Image (cartoon, rainbow, N blue to C red; front, side, top):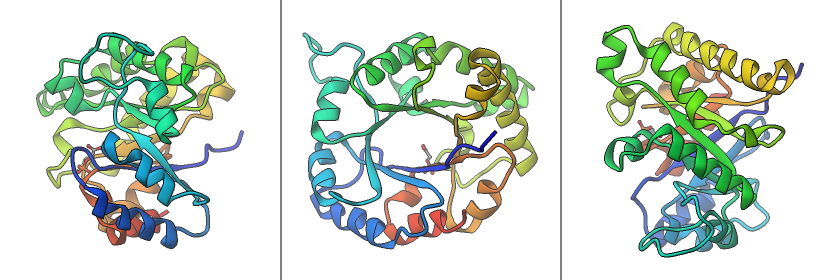
Length: 248
Ligand code: PGA
């Protein structure tokens, strides 16, 4: 059984302007070796310019969310098909900020994943416990329930990844211990194997996200069952993001 190719994805969140495309170019110029697949997920408005700037590059462009319908009366929303047409190849779904701020449920995330697949986008499906849940000893139960609820069966034989992002580690500088990361990743792997079978369940990269930076990337990326990283703040500067990719 071959280990999945790692994926290191940068999530720019609601940051960046056209001037920041220079950072994407610098990432592209600095990526070498090809140990990992690399993606940048800028705000949707920057997807066309970034995908044009990265034509012929190994760096993929992704989106940060999509709607579950292909079109319709959904003011302010963007369909997966529109993101694909704009140049996105991947889409982050169920990020904890969307779960917390916009009340996104597992069921909604699963519907969005189906829409992403319909449009040919590769979903990165995020899960993770809050600090209260971890303190209460519920982290594994919370995360495995999110994985079960957020992954539609349509993912069978399709490329996607799961990102474990403890809510308390996002943007805080705090990270779980390697043992804590490995414990959660093993639990996620068990759900994937249970759902999709031994071979396919083992082929999905499980990313870690939450305060990944150049100084901790190497240790995190070499932890058992860690198949890459979802990087927020440190993906905004090419030098930092390349430092993380270099940790592999
Ligand atoms: P962070 O964010 O790297 O800034 O902690 C991670 C994320 O939200 O994906």
